[in-house]
Image (cartoon, rainbow, N blue to C red; front, side, top):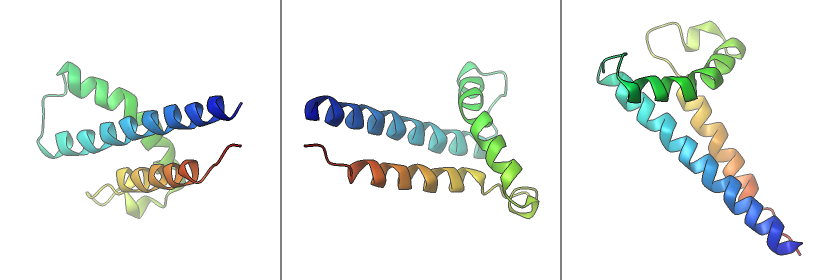
Length: 92
């Protein structure tokens, strides 16, 4: 059971790290004013916008409505905290 738990934690950590990089790439693409019809931009927005919209609903509006959107930073920090928590889990 320890091998299964450890493998599951590693797989979940990898998925979170990939998602973290997707968020970073989405932020960089948003700075470049890429074409919204581009399939890559649509993929990035489709994967990240549902989570970012939920964060925007919770955060005070001055953190995201002023022209500087801090919600990706909040998401990145939350993902880092989850990764730290997963790395501290030990099996067996």
